[in-house]
Length: 117
Image 1 (cartoon, one colour):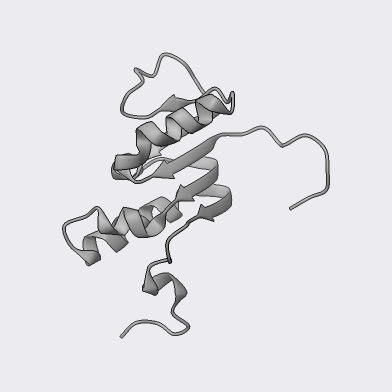
Image 2 (tube, rainbow, N blue to C red; image 1 turned 90 degrees about the horizontal axis):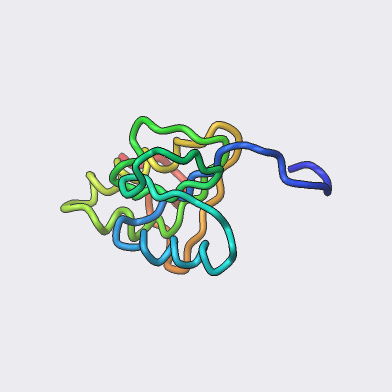
C-alpha cells in the first residue's frame, strides 16, 4: 500500500463468523469506532465500517474487507464444502484491499501449494 497520511475513505466490511458478531461489535465499540452490524441495523444510518456475518456476505461489496477467522467460517457450516464456499464468498467481497486475521490455522485449501484434485 501507499505511504503515510490519513487512510483513504471508503467502505470497510469486517466479515466475521456469525457467532462472533457481538464480540466484534463490542471490540470496535471499545476502540471508539462507529460501525453498523448488517442484519441487525435497520439501514437508516450509513456507516463507513460494517460488521458482516459471513452468512449474509453474498452479493455485498466493500472497498476494503477484513475477514476474521476463516477456519471458523468454514467450521460453522454443516459440511466442509459448504463452509469453503461460504469462505470464498467472504474473500471475494473486496474491491481494493483484503486482509485476513486469524489466530487458528487457515483451512488447508488456503495454504495448499497445488490445486486440489
